[in-house]
Length: 145
Image 1 (cartoon, rainbow, N blue to C red):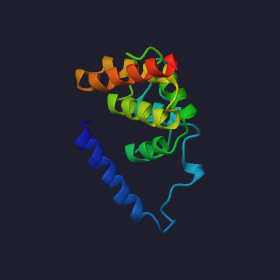
Image 2 (image 1 turned 180 degrees about the vertical axis):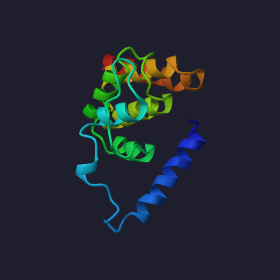
Image 3 (image 1 turned 90 degrees about the vertical axis):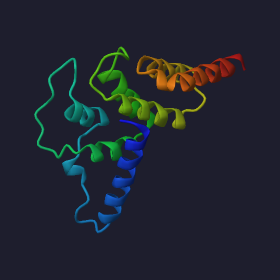
């Protein structure tokens, strides 16, 4: 998914969310996955184990909403369980990139996370090499003190 496509998706989600403000159509805890990882596994699959049977509504917008407001620990747990070797897993590249961006916004001063995000960017296309290099430089600067 390109940046333009992601922007359109986020705008569409915002428009739909405003339409759901009545409350009756909002999802409740009873019809949500118990973890972000479980939600991602149901939606995108898992390279290492079967996707569980699930009767929940698997619309990508619900996953994106959950990802957007997830804490860094939940996002990292999803990435590490579904993509343990960075180059593997079935999470789309745009989900991985957004996930690392959200984690770094919550934990901006962790060099190890910056390097992990940079590695992901380098492995999934030259389009983000400059961002990956910047993350590496920032990590080096933080470690140098």
